[in-house]
Image 1 (tube, rainbow, N blue to C red):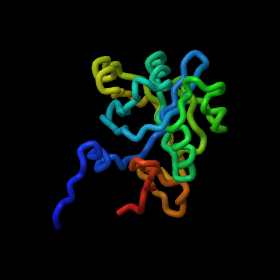
Image 2: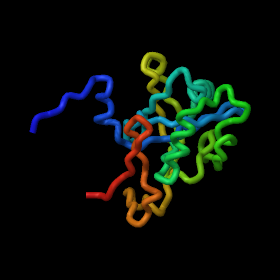
Image 3: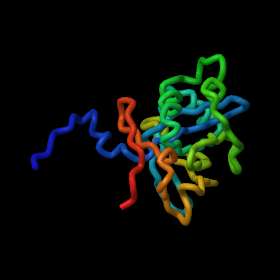
Length: 185
């Protein structure tokens, strides 16, 4: 086998097949949601996550102001929604993305950010301030202060999607394409 060269601007795609998330944020009655493929767990106890939130996004403005965000894990049935909210800015619209795309929400338990109905997991996060990392790399570290999952596909600390294909998590691989989580090995 001879390895094929990958252009360096596409090198991230080799690792970028973890679940895409929808980042929701709110501050002083304003709210927004955006898609983010660059996210990962960082620590166990206390649980921490990282997510890249570009400084030019409206979601970033709300996260900077509130110090909070939620990671909503969408499922296969929500692929079109993920593309829509990831391709549309909430900054200048007459109505927010939740209303524009008819996204149902419910209240978070530990933060003041809406959570999206229909997702299969939710992490409520408070920003751990790292100004240099946030400004230079757009990388946010959040401490998960509450976590929830759909019991149909996550129980006893494990994902199990058997018989629930539409509830499989999405994995963005760029260019508008996704994979869905496969069968466990």
